[in-house]
Amino acid sequence: MESWKKGLTGLLIITLAGCAYSPFGSADKADMVTIENYKYKNDDVTEVAQLMCFKRHIAPYQESARSLPPTKHKIYIRSVDYNNFGNDILISRGGGQMMSSTYLLLEAVLQPGQHVAIKRHDENDLTYLWLQDLDSGKPVSEVKATKMLSNFNVSERIYDKQCAKGTV
Image (cartoon, rainbow, N blue to C red; front, side, top):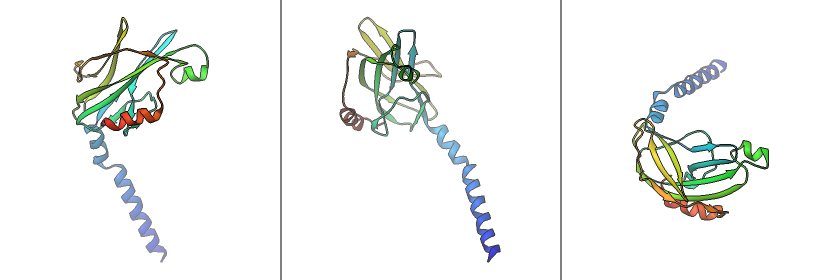
């Protein structure tokens, strides 16, 4: 009976180890699209442009890139300005008090293995947002202009309704 248990344990270990080193895990990641958030910080303000949604719900900000399946996407981007004064814990997590914010929808056809970044440019009273291929340096979405709104406070429920309309 003991040899039967040892044999079964050995088979289980080999199976799990084989799955860990399976070429399918790395092939899947290579076929995905990598999308990076935008963040710029100076002494006074932290500017962020990020995926507003992930898995069709409101997404918390994260520094690392996210992986998406390649396809035609409708992606909501949220852009936020924070002041860098006040609570040091909030500032270390990306910003202090929110000063202004907006969101908009970008559409793009993303290809397997593509590395994309959210880009932002502020000029006069407008904020321009777009997706850019990091290898070619070319936009992969339309460059859209929006106005940042002060005290832009919308409940997560409203955001979730918007997220359900997108593909991310």
